[in-house]
Length: 353
Image 1 (cartoon, rainbow, N blue to C red):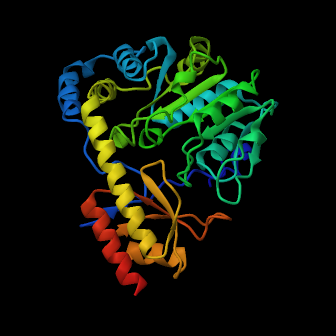
Image 2 (cartoon, rainbow, N blue to C red):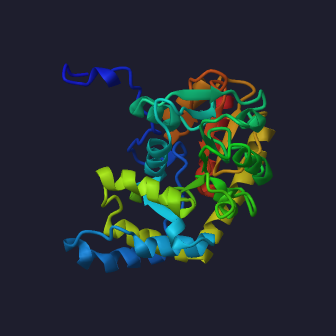
């Protein structure tokens, strides 16, 4: 830290993303990326947008918002795009939290939430998950605070039912509830809170293109809410980054959203591999939670989780281990292709011998 760094942020602990290691034959199962490439339509759309790069990108992201709206069944004025869903989270927390309005979230969840609280000087109200890692949503009733809930949750992979989520929204009518649905496309039909957006003026649903749409490298996300909330967040966006989505990424995102068949096929393949890998790990004595995501949260029976994580890394297989209390004996394993998961299991068997 330099002597010029502002003292007000001296205690800031930045978010730690999954390792981005470069080596031959690497099996990368540590960042919940999609193992399949984007829709072929994405490359064509990006190529078609190149000529327009001499101009500033569309401030309104009109075509992208229209494509998203068509896909999720909402008007385009209910959509706000972000430079990754992390920016949508930042915009929402900046708009609806302050020093007198805390942000409430689970103790075991996406670790970017406390970082944003530190960065923006927002008090954090942390609520513990149950012993089985499920969310105790009754604890969120009537909090009179802004709330963010990852559903499905990360890193636990567990899903709360829409009816349970709706009760939280209903019981906090005067405060914003943010539902972070980065992984919901892997949870099956009827798992999303998007259909609740027209009903509740205090609901924001955040989504990403990084997982099910194979665009992690593009940095693209969106949130859905009623137009008044979208206008509030746009006031923040236009105050620091009005051109937040490049022309290439707008074209890529619109093409990805419109190729519904490719999206459904890719998600189905990942879900099949998820079940196969779950079965394989349970046969090896692992405790594996019932995942509604593109990753597994698994606890080994024999060797310590950290030892397995480090041994796999030495063999060119990256997974995720967290040193945080309550989850330091667990591993998070992104679902790759069948070939990648076979390599993972082969290396794992050698380690367990």
